[in-house]
Image 1 (tube, rainbow, N blue to C red):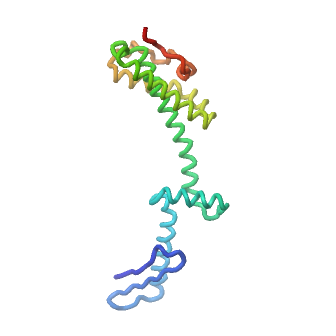
Image 2: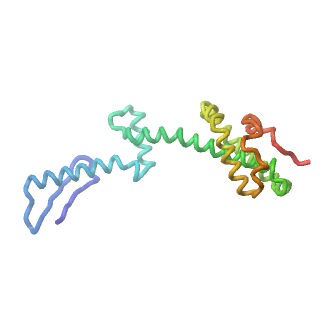
Image 3: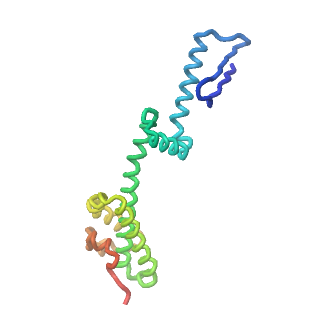
Length: 192
């Protein structure tokens, strides 16, 4: 069985099928044409999966020309939703890492002197990253406040695993506020 089809052609395609040298009847040809057309449509829809950048350029062009009838709505909606989720994941991650480093500065006495400079730089970096996200999306301030305790708890777990300190030495609830954590002039410990 051989099928010849131009799946890349925009408007037309040519398909023939021979089975033992005989040409198939029109009913079979119609089914083959329907299957090839479905494959072509699937190929257009799957541009999102096969070439994201090309899909993105196509969507931008369609939006600029107000060609809303041909938009890939399903993937466009998914992308827009994921943008918000991405910012939430990023800001949560930065907050967790910020809390982890603040805990290192406050409680890890054995490493504090030798690691202060690096930890201080990390604290500054996480604060800058959080600030940048909040500048673009100020509404995430509420999300940050709502998730402060949870991210502190995650940071505490990481800190305890890294430091191997007794868990009773580090409070289960934050002993600093979110405002202090984000304040670029505040640290829980300073070198003498």
